[in-house]
Amino acid sequence: MSSLVIGLISAACIFGGALLGMWLHKVLPERHLDAASKDTIKLGAGLLATLAALVLGLLVSSAKSSLDAMNTGITQAGAKILLLDHMLSEYGPETKDVREQLRQIVASSIARIWPEEKGHTGGLRAVESLDDAGKLYRAKLSELTPTNDFQKSRLTQALQISDDVLQTRLLLMEGQQANLPATFIVVLVFWLTGLFVSFGLFAPSNGMVMTVLLICALSVSSAIFLILEMNRPLDGFIKASNAPLRKAVELIGK
Image 1 (cartoon, rainbow, N blue to C red):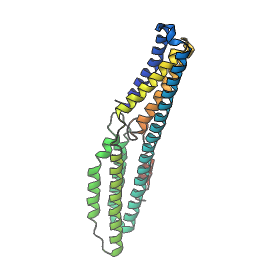
Image 2: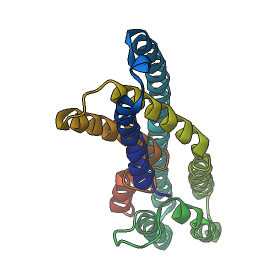
Image 3: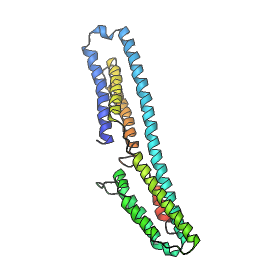
Image 4: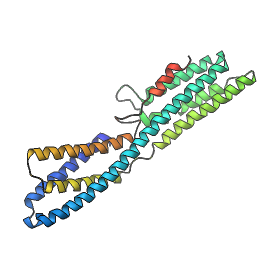
């Protein structure tokens, strides 16, 4: 289920809680809505609001960290690729074909992970399928035959950097395997729905109040949407930037 669908379902549940509260206000006996009951309900609503705010804040912070980690990993990969190209350029002109192949692999990876055409599978699945290209390129590096100590040192460094790029890819890939538990979202939506029930219980039934409650429900559910989106920084609407890799493609071979 996509983040947008979950966000819309959350908004419907939360706003439905406000409507339920308005309906209960009409059908409950007066003794259930007296001053003492109102004070108790306000205390419960304050507790739910505090819990929901704490959890939302923690989840947004965690999701932002996931997005930042992906952006950092992509930046590091781009820098290592440029360093690899630099090592190969110092090796000698015989690495021209290898450097061109490196540029093509990076460009192809960008096109597969961030496809421009709709309907193409990209994101995390594309990252997982890049292993063959990495193995092929490493085999190409291994075919180089250094003729002096300088070339040997540059080839050794190039192989090490190639391994570092592979390690970065694997770390980013594995870091995206831990999804937010569905139970967490269900409990959070339950708390928010209960909170909006308390809002609707003592709110007047007019268009202005219902509009404000709807806007509030959409705002809270948008936070849930952002959390889910940032937890999957290579899929969905909010994606990690591919600018470092695109810059690497421009500079490789120059």
